Image (cartoon, rainbow, N blue to C red):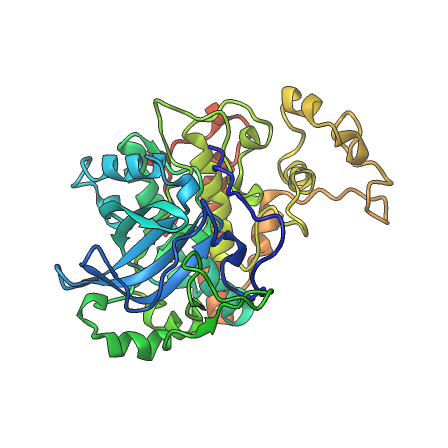
Length: 408
């Protein structure tokens, strides 16, 4: 599902700032300008910023009507029509309420439109959760989650996807950045406690390059998202729970899209080759996510995350691609002989085979402490069996989400 392009001013208007959304998108068709303590719809008071993406900003707010915290996702005006994400979330709110995996999906609580100088914006109100598994893992020492936490994240993610598939929905964008840790007892916190753990909102004034006063199209200041390490101790324990979020690429099983914007490292080969999309794309992405969550790097790791790089890693791990994709891959002759063997001059200075199969890659998942390594090692043989069934090239040969039995 291709995102709607955002109109971009021809020349920069604002002084560039690090770790915030693209300020140039505070223009027609772009972001909704938000300030701390704004009241939205006379009900939701903005408390802090949770994050941002190319097509939205996400804010922590207090629902003063229900006395709870919520996440407000303001979508850019150019992409704020009746989006597939809203349709999917509304659908999920009416299906399989007793499924055990439902608790791991961030529910839609409300949605409405708001007006700004940049246009009309759709706002989604969802259950609030903490930092993403990806951000936490990246920030902590060794980039590794504790084994018990990693197991729970993997298991709960599989259960959450099983709920989606049982409801006729395919997520289409599963990776550690879209899996959030829940914060225990969060709704009982006063705002002062939020600021104690999140840090007070850091406000950086927005400035125009031409020195002219700001217009109402831009906020007076931007807010940095909280450092995930501040919340790590709260969310990473044996009682941890996750929420799967971001349904911007999701679709109904009966209405598969022609393409998906899944990040390359988690994209099944049929996505990379613009082949038929099916629910099995989630199975491939989940396998890549499980490997990464248990370890400290991506399964199909490459420096620039370009398609050619990831495809090379696929062939290294799983062997030659099916013939229709093998022939379709234009740059394949740069790396491989026709039989699937590496060319001596394809980048490996030794000229030796660079095959690294799944078993070897699983051995690569290591822990620095002896106890953690013992605990992890008990899982690896059984995990190899499951992942091998999830990572088969042909979608029809992969097991279904409901058939995944993790060894923990």
